Image 1 (cartoon, rainbow, N blue to C red):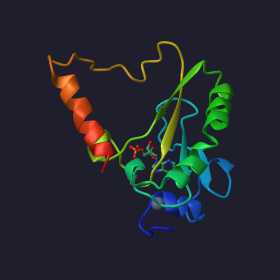
Image 2: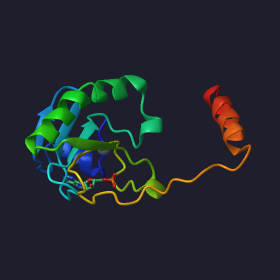
Image 3: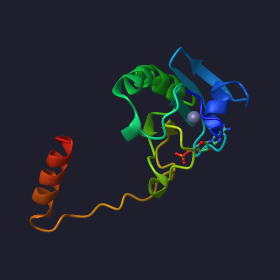
Length: 140
Ligand code: AMP
Ligand code: ZN
């Protein structure tokens, strides 16, 4: 179902142009208009869902089906030995366009694209407590 104020729904409907690289009954992939690396591509479901935790599993599966081949083709097009798949969910996570999308970001050695990975260690007992909460949430 199209959401009229959604820029990606407008791309799907052909109302806004894009550099299309893949289209099937369920999904569309096109170059990101503001790439963070050469070849940066977006994969979206044709059905409008805001984010992955609101996505019916069958729609997610249909969209993700093309991801291995697409990611390989994107990386190969720019001779990239590596790539990131990124999915921002919610504004605090950096999501600007509220139509589920997967970024395919080709990577070169030492390209400086992501320079921070703020890893830390859990204090004693925190990991156990978190596990229990997540396991409980999975039952809901
Ligand atoms: P996000 O921050 O995860 O919501 O990413 C949204 C992405 O969509 C950004 O990387 C934008 O550059 C990209 N974008 C926004 N509008 C367009 C458009 N019309 N065509 C292609 N990419 C777009
Ligand atoms: Zn949409």
